[in-house]
Image 1 (cartoon, rainbow, N blue to C red):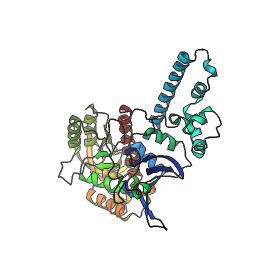
Image 2 (image 1 turned 90 degrees about the vertical axis):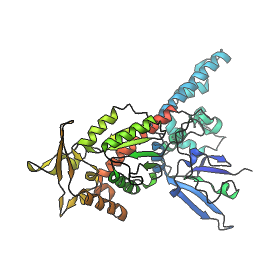
Image 3 (image 1 turned 60 degrees about the horizontal axis):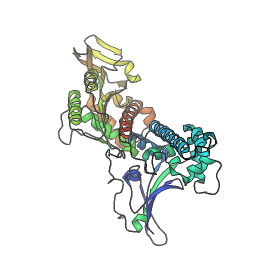
Image 4 (image 1 turned 180 degrees about the vertical axis):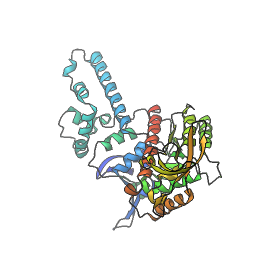
Length: 420
């Protein structure tokens, strides 16, 4: 008997693969998800990769397998199935009234929300092949796998839809213990770290997403904060690190990098992050005009409430003013504690006038001290992220939403052939 790896939704065996771990399953996990236990009887290791449902859904978003794409693929499957059934009846069963055909009637009644509502019951009873409530229930319980796995048995889009439709599921686990015990996989193999994560002709998996930013300080902040805000996504994102190879920084260089990557037809998904200041927004507008391929996008740091009335210093003295779009570099997103000195917010100092945009440019005083305070807080780990760093939380929300959109486009363009 050939051993298999198995994907569990809680204790439900959803799917698996004999003799090896396929990319579409290993792509759901990162190496930090690995859990190893030893049998009390023979000491053999039981190894699985486990993550909670919300984490898996976030990762699927980053791979482009979004809820919106799942719904579109379901609608395409349903419409195709209806057409095929109608054609079959017209050709092979011309005397049978179509409204009396049980399969066709079930398909026409199976709207997206109806399918989602049925998934929970199907998961609970999927191996009870003797009891069916109706034709749809019978079809979804493995009699016809396409009714459950509408985008194909090895499709992450199908899997996303199933997991998303089952909110009572708490954890998803990939058990590889049997493969190790049988010698198909070495116990030392880093199964998920070694997975293929590039846009393939079959459309999956996708990642990791490359993040570009204006300079080494921006990258240092993003690398430090991802480990706190989204530690379950650290292997699903990578960064163009200016420090490693002394890469030039600045908003104009981000535009140059985008041009170079686009010209080289780099297949990885790329998100370029510009500052929310005069120079950053000017470069952002140039980037928008580049007609970038679908796997690349650019965003700017979001407007923030803190920036709407912030202390500034300029030729006209000290004033509280709106600095969104004028002086919101990465430092303005590092929390009030890091931005404060002696109980007051460090002011933004106006440094020049950008004649191309007609906007004054500024930056916060002692920005190195602001960055160091934030990086120290991230290393120490003792803080309430939601209350103390709402601006950085918004930054990551903006980046992840942009990454999901371009990954979705990649998945949509490289649709895998159905495998039912």
